[in-house]
Amino acid sequence: MGANNGQEHGAVVTVGEAALSGWRGSVGRAIAKPIAKRTRFDVDQIEAVLGLLLLAYTVYRIARPLVRAARSRS
Image (cartoon, rainbow, N blue to C red; front, side, top):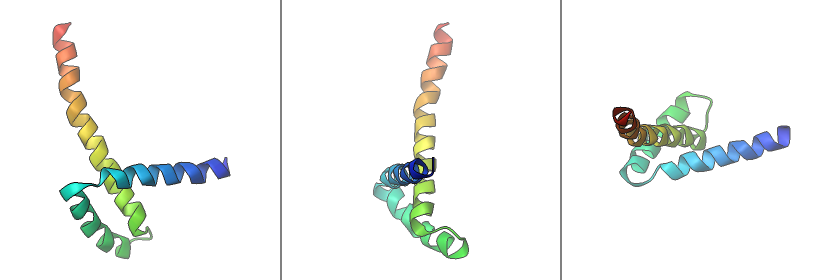
Protein backbone atom coordinates (compact mmCIF):
# COMPACT_ATOMS: atom_id res chain seq x y z
CA MET A 1 0.00 0.00 0.00
CA GLY A 2 2.90 2.38 0.70
CA ALA A 3 4.31 2.19 -2.83
CA ASN A 4 0.90 2.82 -4.42
CA ASN A 5 0.21 5.69 -2.07
CA GLY A 6 3.23 7.59 -3.40
CA GLN A 7 2.16 7.03 -6.99
CA GLU A 8 -1.41 8.12 -6.28
CA HIS A 9 -0.15 11.26 -4.59
CA GLY A 10 1.91 12.06 -7.67
CA ALA A 11 -1.09 11.55 -9.94
CA VAL A 12 -3.30 13.77 -7.79
CA VAL A 13 -0.69 16.51 -7.75
CA THR A 14 -0.31 16.21 -11.53
CA VAL A 15 -4.07 16.51 -12.12
CA GLY A 16 -4.34 19.45 -9.74
CA GLU A 17 -1.47 21.30 -11.38
CA ALA A 18 -2.86 20.58 -14.84
CA ALA A 19 -6.16 22.16 -13.82
CA LEU A 20 -4.34 25.44 -13.17
CA SER A 21 -4.12 26.97 -16.62
CA GLY A 22 -4.67 30.41 -18.08
CA TRP A 23 -5.53 33.24 -15.74
CA ARG A 24 -6.60 30.79 -13.03
CA GLY A 25 -3.12 29.30 -13.12
CA SER A 26 -1.51 32.71 -12.76
CA VAL A 27 -3.71 33.55 -9.79
CA GLY A 28 -3.27 30.12 -8.24
CA ARG A 29 0.50 30.23 -8.49
CA ALA A 30 0.57 33.77 -7.12
CA ILE A 31 -1.38 32.88 -3.99
CA ALA A 32 0.28 29.47 -3.53
CA LYS A 33 3.64 31.00 -2.60
CA PRO A 34 2.44 33.06 0.40
CA ILE A 35 0.30 30.16 1.61
CA ALA A 36 3.25 27.78 1.37
CA LYS A 37 5.42 30.16 3.40
CA ARG A 38 2.85 30.19 6.22
CA THR A 39 2.08 26.46 6.26
CA ARG A 40 4.00 23.21 6.26
CA PHE A 41 2.95 22.43 2.69
CA ASP A 42 5.11 23.17 -0.32
CA VAL A 43 4.12 25.26 -3.32
CA ASP A 44 3.40 22.22 -5.51
CA GLN A 45 0.96 20.81 -2.99
CA ILE A 46 -0.86 24.12 -2.59
CA GLU A 47 -1.10 24.51 -6.37
CA ALA A 48 -2.47 20.98 -6.64
CA VAL A 49 -5.16 21.64 -4.04
CA LEU A 50 -6.16 24.91 -5.70
CA GLY A 51 -6.28 23.19 -9.08
CA LEU A 52 -8.43 20.37 -7.73
CA LEU A 53 -10.81 22.86 -6.13
CA LEU A 54 -11.17 24.73 -9.40
CA LEU A 55 -11.67 21.46 -11.26
CA ALA A 56 -14.35 20.33 -8.81
CA TYR A 57 -16.13 23.69 -9.13
CA THR A 58 -16.06 23.42 -12.92
CA VAL A 59 -17.52 19.91 -12.81
CA TYR A 60 -20.22 21.15 -10.43
CA ARG A 61 -21.12 24.03 -12.75
CA ILE A 62 -21.42 21.64 -15.68
CA ALA A 63 -23.28 18.90 -13.81
CA ARG A 64 -25.82 21.11 -12.05
CA PRO A 65 -27.77 22.13 -15.18
CA LEU A 66 -27.64 18.56 -16.47
CA VAL A 67 -29.16 17.23 -13.24
CA ARG A 68 -31.83 19.94 -13.28
CA ALA A 69 -32.73 19.09 -16.87
CA ALA A 70 -32.94 15.39 -16.07
CA ARG A 71 -35.19 16.04 -13.07
CA SER A 72 -37.53 18.31 -15.01
CA ARG A 73 -38.08 15.63 -17.66
CA SER A 74 -39.30 13.13 -15.05
